[in-house]
Image 1 (cartoon, rainbow, N blue to C red):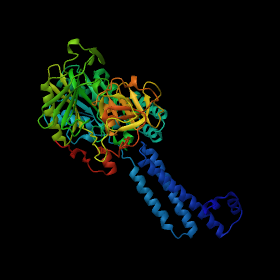
Image 2: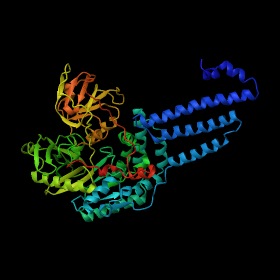
Image 3: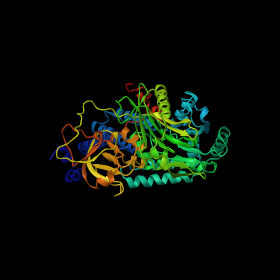
Image 4: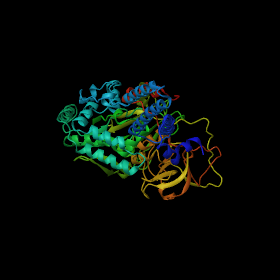
Length: 596
């Protein structure tokens, strides 16, 4: 029995409570000192595990642990003084001073409710990210600074959001719910999320914000056409930066004047969806670091649309751009429900190297009465390219211009209207998964492990051994630790599972989808557009996904130079608010480039 265990023995403690004297009092202080020291060390270990453990966490949980540690440390100083007869009194004052500094670092600054509530895109400057958010600022920069064709529109600012939350009385209840949220419990996370979203959707918008929104729409009508339909798109501060937030927030398309306020609140509420909360926490961001601005953008009657990657994300050292295109609205592509035509362009010469044209059945179009619907594509167009070579070349030239201006590879959304005009809809830094030179090249065949599935689109290279979980076969709230998700489409809803699965395989989906962007950010091995993964792979199968080989092997493969990949939790992202809060320098990402 150790000395500490002896001190805790009930019979010894009981005996000592019945006697008094200087030695007994010193013993009691010493015993409390040892217990408090143990508690402090355990709390420090728990805080370190929170930071280094790789799981998402809320700052409320961190604040709670730190407060416990502060209280325990102050008591520890008191007991040390009890043992030493006050020899270390200055420790108590030092602990209190440190506590004040720590609590100050956790303090949330008061949100600004004054300033412009709505701004036309023409008035948004390149340094307006903290006011207008990333998406609107980048879009305005492309139009105002680079002179490129972008849709006209406006942005409902962070000031408007702050006024909405403050005057509706939502700020404190939302903060309280987020403080207590348990991100490790999917059911509890879903319940908390739905509570917040319902609060936002049913809250009344302040009259000042509502009036500014209506005035901005009327001004947009004057610059475009009467009864113009708009896309209400998220433009959160920090979005389309190091943290892309791809597909995490709602977009309301084909909105008319009567639905403006409802659509605005819908986008704001989407900030608190389970997948958006988890994504934000994986980047170490607080709710206050990503205020939700909302851009109202003129709808383009898209004949074709798609995504331009100025560096092919599936093969970043190939020296190629990749352009993915579909007929109709691009939402069908980025939602992971469509497989696009792909065009590959040499980054140096801008020559079209090859085309991969896929059969087309449906296109997404806007309805005359609002909303969206799928339209059957005429048989004469099903095998024709979605866009012409001239459009491909124009996109490639535009991509080089954007890359030079923003200082790194870009992920660009675009659309072609019925008149053949090219519009840019969005630009953001492209997350590139670099190959690790220390990793042995994976062999094509593995002895005793037959190939179950071959083919598909490599979204993120890596190896993932584990157990098949069919998305349609079971409740995804509870997953095995080695789950490999197999789904029909690359739905952005699956982004909430990125930190809980080893790999993702889909029947349909594009490397240009929002889910693809997220799995690349977090380095989860993924293979999309395999055609029939959900038919070939059975729930509970033990497999090894080697996405770089575009193959799935039977059984669990170990060794032989095979290094298993796992999701990476990001550090605090460099949103403008986070930089100010955490005293961070500007992200070095914009200065990073790929060999051209």
